[in-house]
Length: 595
Image (tube, rainbow, N blue to C red):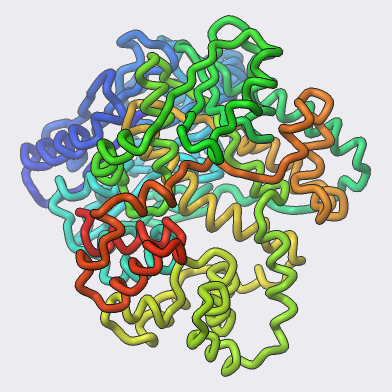
């Protein structure tokens, strides 16, 4: 894993551009502490930079940016290609010669041989820039699931890109996006393709941007989209295939030249990952967990009942209110974009780093694919409200109940309203009050978010899964996991989001994939014999910290007198009375006080 940045076709001097790219990379050193590289050629309008986190081939041979043998291709790359050995073998058989053991070099020659068709062949997590001297073009490419971030800015023929939004400040790109606070108060994060900066966008997952240096023009093209065909209707066969494909996914993702760990909460998903990872790595695998003095949030008992059956290094970190207070501002500073999530990931990855672990596996993705969230039930209730008129739905804003107020979103002329009804933080009228603006501005802003209208024609479970996978996970969980882990120089791998595993799950019929009686039924049935009963039989708890209690103790967050806005003051008062969720209170703190 790495952090990457670059500027192409700037009208500034080469020396100035090189300094800017170096500064962009330096600002992301936390994500690539092992090495630094810059590619620049005199009288050429391009500068590419890289900060390296060495995982494969720890030698200097893995230095980036990397050039092809003829030096007509240059790459700066962030990620891991899990099937790089298979592709490498294929290329060797075609006559290619390799000088390193890196997956970076495989990408170069795969592109040289197959061109744009190479991107679809990569099974992994990646964001890269390829400079093709032969045709004087530059490619920005992002993996099929958008697991690794890649942001770009285009202005006056100049293309600027980076792994983090904050890095753009070092390229003098500072103008604020006027709508980011609306997005944040509605979603609890900034939805793609938007960022906090004006005209700085996230490249879509499964897409590549091609920039022609001569014409100073670019196009964006999708190279991959997942499709749901639901051809598997036999439950026993589905379970067999899940066990086979998930095992293969984990085996592939354990390729590493450094020790690995598992983020182990004690829940179903992380327990399955831990069991399977232990089968392929008996000697150098660690489980990393958080403990709390608050007994309601401790899952130590569930973890121990599983770990006692395995030979695994157990790393448990007690995290207290004092730890939270001492680190809170550092956590916020490490957020590349405002979010109401990711604090838990920051703490456990800090623990991993302290124990010398650079790579960890996570159970992220299982809830979205197998129906683990309440939204899979709530979406049916939402559908039962379709007969209500827009005027009735809009009148819900006068309710004192936060959940009822969110029903207003169902009146929006966009499927985004349905998602916000399921997962929104604040309703449009509250957002307007908090930002001293009018509701029309808020609603127009939200309705303009690009979302394909055909999503509302899908079945309820398919739609809930789509929202959770493409909205909540994509815009919040994956982004938060990336910048919170990389702030400590730790790489998080997500076996449930392996391309082949996703294709398998999307081919399973909803009738056997989702169940009202048992959340994530197929996963439970596939692994219940391997797990303690208490792991799969209890209700979902999630990767949860005692934030409600901790934030209510914090004077910085919970003191109403620190908020000048009347509506914010009232909401924080409710928070102090335990009538408002901590994530909603955190959003107010970020809007009014955090830098």
